Length: 494
Figure 1 (cartoon, rainbow, N blue to C red):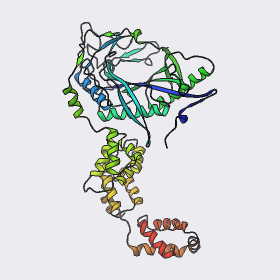
Figure 2 (tube, helix red, strand yellow):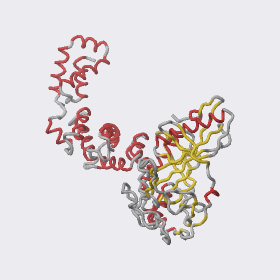
Figure 3 (spheres, rainbow, N blue to C red):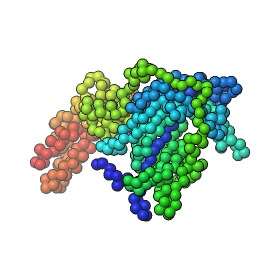
Figure 4 (cartoon, rainbow, N blue to C red):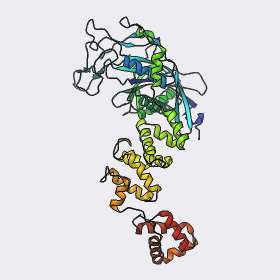
């Protein structure tokens, strides 16, 4: 069921308010070296060990643009269905950066590498909304200031200084915390499919500046506040709700909102002022004299476009059409590229012909639960796609029941790790009992031992499940459930 606009409104003491959210996502480019130097981008090294003379801003050192980072930005633009600008330029953004030795950031201002685009976001399996992309530009990341190493001093680690960032600026098209979270989730998925950013928010590879304002429904846009460097999707949702409620409280009390940059404190559940919001002229942007304008041709873009992977929306549509999956199952499977690949490997495993919907059910259900319990992803779990394929096959050919399959799944994740389902079935004697004679004997024994239940089930046939459970219990769960049902109905006359 679609969510109505009224469901997203924030209830205030004087009426309803609409939340308006825009986002600036800082996505660290997946590359081996930095944007303007050959220093390594590897995460987790000892402080200040991945710093070139360029990164350290030594006199006379000039930046050299990394072509691989340019290609990654263009690939991202293509994945966002955005305008690719074949001519762009780099500017100096002047500001006091304690962790950027130059004292300025090399960024793009008036001429970004990527222009307007769009992201289609699934809020629910049946409800989508569109978020416009204003621009994507390349810039260098700052280093990291460490304030918890000493009671009297701050330390600076320049390993991250100069690493390439893509700043992806959205239009103010989101209207709730849930929409903001769904947008970042979808954008991160696209970046991971493209291989242009790993999206690891814990390591700081993806960070969000969240712009929040409130207005009366249908009214003009309100004054926005920017919540800086939010580093988890859950915190993004909390920050939007918290800041919107703060603004509503001020406005309903007769106050006004100051445009400013704020920080979100998840421990206290509040946003607090960081600094007044700067305007573009405050940064004194001007073209970087050390870098020529960036130019490339149609052939460069075409070669990158030809090499793009199948993206989540296209993969979801194909799964629904080709495999008959529901929108929900298809959405779950394409959320991570590795999971989608795992599913396709299971469906295509020889011999082919198994039911793709059953494969999806097992992967999104029991296999996912097993991986979650082990603290890992499905694709990285102990259970392989080939094992899932064979498990579905032995259920389909009647060798085992669904209940026995669940037991085998637990064994494959534990003491029988690495063993094929058929091998486990034979070695452990788990083959399903389909012999009617054996099932009839078990049914007769249950009926003979429970005459009172027999009378009850004949008066109320819905109690048949109790008998099925008893027979399954007496056969160690190996009896074919359908055969048990058929025999019971015949014996009990229902």
